[in-house]
Structures are given as C-alpha cells and as structure tokens.
Image 1: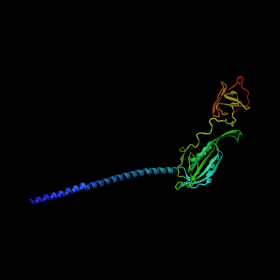
Image 2 (image 1 turned 90 degrees about the vertical axis):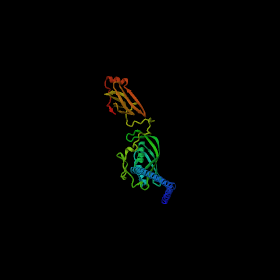
Image 3 (image 1 turned 180 degrees about the vertical axis):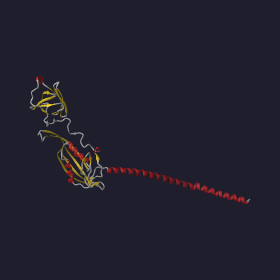
Image 4 (image 1 turned 60 degrees about the vertical axis):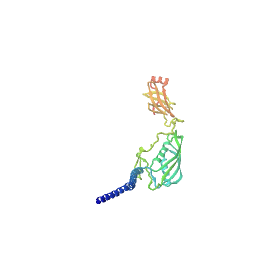
Length: 332
C-alpha cells in the first residue's frame, strides 16, 4: 500500500513539475520569443522590400543610363578641344561670301567656364534675308557648337543699278545685328580632338573627323530654306522696275490680232504675244480674236488686277479690209 502511495506522490510531483514548466514557458518565455520572432520577420520583410526597391531602382537607373549613353553616342554637336579665333572668323567669312553688302565681325573676347570655353563675336551687316537665314541655319545646325543670340533685323529697300542692263533694280534686304558664340575646350570626355569641317552634304550633315558619330538625317533638322521672306512686302510701296524690258501694257497699243496672237505697238516697235507670254508686271491670259480683245493679269506691287484691251474702231475697220501693214514682228 505504501508503494502505491509513493508512486502516486512521485507522479503528482512530476505532474506539478511538468505543469509548472509548461506554465512558465507558455506565459513567460514564449511571449518574448514570439515577439522576437515577429520582430525578426518584420525586419526580414522590410529588407526584402528594400531589396526589391533597390532592384527596381537599379533597373530604372540602368535604363536611364542606357538612354543617356545612346543620346550621347547619337549627338551631332561637337565641341572641339582646341579652337583659334582666326578659324572662327574664317568660317564666318566663308558662310557670308554671297548675298551680303557687308558682314562685319567684332571679337568681344573669350569666356572661361568650368566645363567649356567660348569665343564671343558681335556681327552686323546688310544682306538678303534668305542668305542671312542660310548663315544662321549653318551656325545652329552644323556639327561644330555655335550659338546665335540677340538677333535683330530691320527691313530696308535699296534701288541699285543692274550691272548687265544698267537699269534700276529694287533690292529687298535686311540690316541685322547678332551675337555669335563658338564653344571649345570642353571638359574631359566632352571635346573632340579636331574640328568638324564638313557642312550640309547629300541631304545629311556629315562628320568626317568624328566618323564614330552617326550622320544626321535632313528630315529631323529645320528647313534649310525659309518658307517665305517676312520682309518682302505683300503690297509694295514701289512697283519693281521693268528690268527685263517687257511690254508695258499701260503704255502699249493693241493694233491687231493675227493668227490668234496679239500685236502690240510699244516704244516704236511691234511685239507679237500669245496667251501665257510675259509682260511687264504679269502675263497674257487670253487672246480672243472673235471679240478682238486681250486679257492680261498684272501684279501691281501686290495688287492683282486684270486688264482688258480691245481693238479700236479704226483698227477693226482696217483689219476688216485686210491685213494691217506692219514692220517685222518681234516675239517677246
């Protein structure tokens, strides 16, 4: 009997010990471990999210870097490593060799920046708008890095003598002032060893010394020719002179219509004109032998006018009697 009681006591003590240990572990040790594990899990999740964000940022940065490299490799502007003032002046003189009455260049000095250097010039002169447009286009779109700023234009009309005919000729020109900056001496990796001397050729800008640079297609560049001359007046104050010595219908006399062509008497000579032939300020648009009339369209300094001329009674009467005796006709 005593053995049974002893066994029961031992079992009870063991139960109490196990129960106490379980209670201690459950209520004292496990909460701390659970909290530690939860904190560790949270840290692991944060690290995982941080790694994912870093990977995404790396991919984005790599893509941007590739885009920048592609743009850099596709650049068409070149900053020469060395550049002399005489080279820039010679280049400007080369561009302005035609279309200018004068093209004056004044050197304003050299500027130094941390990443590059520039020569600055004051340019002024007088020339045709299309030629000035060409010069600015070449400066802005050539491989070499030039910049045009503070461009100012004024419209002027000049009456000059044509060298061949010695007649008065109207020249619609512009006077201009502008500043031109030539860049050179860029930071490391930015400069080219030599200047790019080739210009706009075969529809593309070519880079002879910088053969690694791709050519620039003409369609991505601005128009090399202006769409219109904004300084050429729509309605002119002065009508252009008759430099080609064409028949002036306001001074000429219609004397006959022979074989579908109109015969005019002007300045002592006879001229035979057909529809489509040029006259001073315009052209003949119709010759009507049935109604004995001629219609011409004239541009009188921007004002379009249609002029109709008819045979007078005397000429009609002589034409009915037979051919009018004329001196040899002149086709004009």
